[in-house]
Image (cartoon, rainbow, N blue to C red; front, side, top):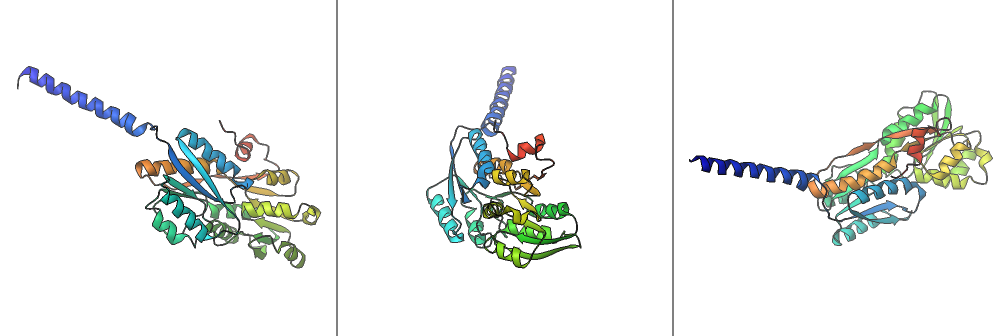
Length: 310
């Protein structure tokens, strides 16, 4: 091989390395110009409880060229209705879906089978089987445990758990029950607020724990005209809304455990994009914050309650 041939071969190799490196840098690492169409299925999407989650999704959508379509289910919707919505979206060739399961048990098989066809991320509520998408939530068991720890000792407790076919609610209830102090006693557990007034009257308690955001908001609506009846009851909730923050400030609510739903919304969108592009499936556990009247005006707590979108 002549010197000129060696130079030509060396140049060719260097050129290949440069081109391949540019492809790796710009073709795989840099976001492309494609618009992704991602649909989001939430229970009661108009509820204030989703505000922070939506803000997180919107910020991620701007950064990842995502067109979001948000669909809501009313309180009477069941697993079959959510199945039909997912099927319709799949047939309309959306790029991916984000789902808050209305029924973790009823949707288990359907989510498991369809997540291998349609990029899918579950938020807050998981299913019992492994599936081909990602799951993003705060640790529900730990949030229930944290309320039990914060409440301390001697208490007679009533619980509003929310729908117990949603795994998030079951895990929160387990976390609370399994970590109660010995001198704490659960008097009753209700799934919703329909019979709350009767139970409070017949089976008095000095503490009330509400494990689901939508149930906490319903409770606030229910007691608007008779708040004085609950002045001697320590009320703890999992959730975050303007109403809950207001009544925390007024001393009606003792404390709130607030999952970082802004980050959950952001990571849900980011996760769908990663599945679409790289088949990269990874669960994420969000943090949560205990908020009381003593710390609610701290700067770091304010950022969780009222995140500012840049």
